Image: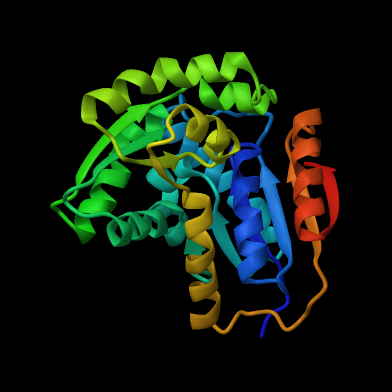
Length: 266
């Protein structure tokens, strides 16, 4: 047993969408979260810059005595996961793409037409396509980058005509051309506009990787005998810039999951 916190990090506030599923699966665990809101978005940055930022944040979390790292960011998972695993061999490091790929392969067949949307970096790496095809090479997978989603979400522009118009701009042709029936939200910010997407494209089955990661986190903790024996949820959320929208989203997480959380600027 180990009552140290789980370290979870993202380029901004999107990683907060991973907290709920992890809290539901592991109600006794403490969370130490870091959102790099001052330097978001990561999706348009170079691979080298993303890796540099990821190492900086991971080092901060490890120095604060986390027992594992959960990467709540598709862009970081697509570019820096092996580097982080190599840099911190003493603790488990879990990404978000592989658990989501397993869920896609479990739920889909060759009859499905699967769309992946994500940042430019995530799409360019083809990490989802490779992860899915490593399980089932016969699945039809198509990808499209939606770079403007993250800045608008970080600004809280979600339930608006502006966001709906942007969704149609990115997805109308993508969905129609490939006759998509399944859509994977390949960025942890995107679950925050899941309702918008479902309303505009009700025919789509939407797979949310934020829901898939919790199982991988629990598995890693069990295999390494790191599960907590406590029930108190005393967690801390750090941000490199405490924007109003970040605090608002953390408030929603506290309400939904009954966390006792301290919010701090890095």
